[in-house]
Structure formats: structure tokens, C-alpha cells
Image 1 (cartoon, rainbow, N blue to C red):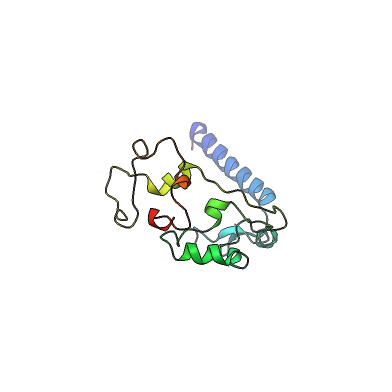
Image 2: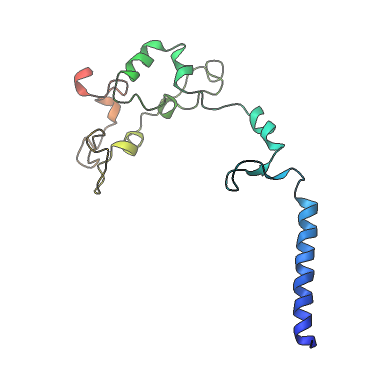
Length: 156
């Protein structure tokens, strides 16, 4: 074989060998496929304990129900029953110790995430009323007229 063909092949082989050597040095031994499929099972196995040791920021609706049963009953009886408390009240983390009180997001933008009337077909249109944010009380927050725990105006 001529040198002009042999040299690039040797360079490619050397590059692959260098890459494999670097991979064996830098990639931990426990990194690989640890699940049933390649997509979601590819991780460093020793990292599982590190993630389990991380404190949960979001506790879920059941955690809130322990102390706030009246609000919990109210929200579970409303149209907002599928929404977790922490979507509006922020992460509970170590509540009630730290923070003692959760800050409530009363911004119009929070409500418009779900209630903005979008110009394309929506399968939830009958269940999820949309508004035109420019036309519908543009200068005020939604919570001035609507109680998020009982969203219809009749329940105020």
C-alpha cells in the first residue's frame, strides 16, 4: 500500500486508540446501562445514592393537606383539583420551619399559562376556559376577582 493511503489510516487508528484510552481514564467504572433500555438506563450507578440524599423541594398536595385541610378540601372540590399546591405557593422544601410561610405567586402570567385563549384547536377547550388577556381585565391580577381555590365567580 502506498504511503498516502497508509498514513491517514494510521492517524485514524491512533486517534481511536487515544480516544479509547482517554475514555477508560475519565469515565467511571460504574457508568453504563443499568436499566431495561439504553435511553433511560444509561447513568452512573453510584450517583443513585447521591440523588436519594438530595432533599425534595416539592412535597406534593398530600403534604399540604396535613396542616391546611380546609384549603385542601376547597381546592380538591374545585376545577383546579389537578394542580399541585406548590405550582402557586412555591416549593415547600422544609416548610413550615424554613420558610415559615410560602410566598404566593398571584401574577397574571401564572394563570395565563393554562387560561390564555390560544388560536389553534385545543382538546381541553370545553374543560379549560381560555381568555383573551388583552380584553379580559388587562390591568389587574386574576386573583382580584377569582379565588384560585374556588375559581368560578359564583363561589367568591
